[in-house]
Amino acid sequence: MVAAFGLSGCSEDTSSAPGPTAVPLMKPPTETGAPLPAPTTLTDVLGRLADPNVPGSVKVGLVENGTAADAAALDRFAKALHDSAYAPVTVDAAGLMWADDQPGNVIANVTIKAANPKAGEDMTFPMEFTPQGDSWQLTRKTTDLLLQLGQQPTTTPTS
Image 1 (cartoon, rainbow, N blue to C red):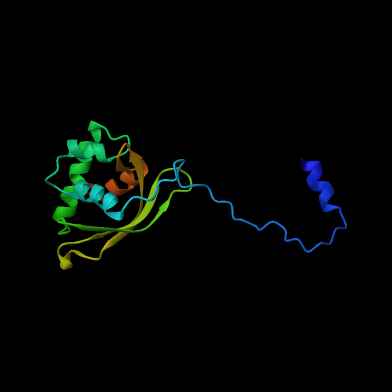
Image 2 (cartoon, rainbow, N blue to C red; image 1 turned 90 degrees about the vertical axis):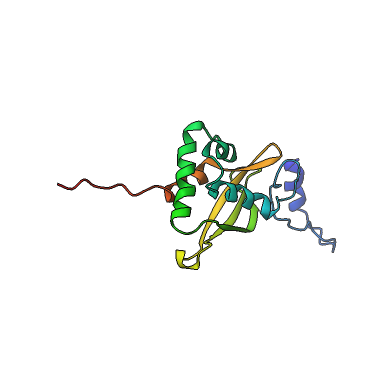
């Protein structure tokens, strides 16, 4: 087949037949060609993670490869948002697109808005979600980054 293409390129045929149109190579978003999830599907995941009334043991199911060991960190994250006057939060997702490196995953620019305007500026982060059955989870990588925000500063002992 390569020889046939190579030989046809050496031909002196100058007919006006149009050549093939260049088509950008794009990988399909998923093997099934499923549509992107609704933004509210993803913001609901984050809303539950930020809700101090949802126990950490329940939130573990909202995180890719979540374990019981994550429950306390998820509770601290929700408490940090609450203590910073962000709770109850409003979460918006925009710019949804399929992840390049993980087929089936979705990346969204997520904005977390504080309930109290005095709490500070809105926080906007790109976050990645992965499908899990009929629902979505925050990826492990994104969760780890997000939980760093909920960590309490360590205190240095004074003498």
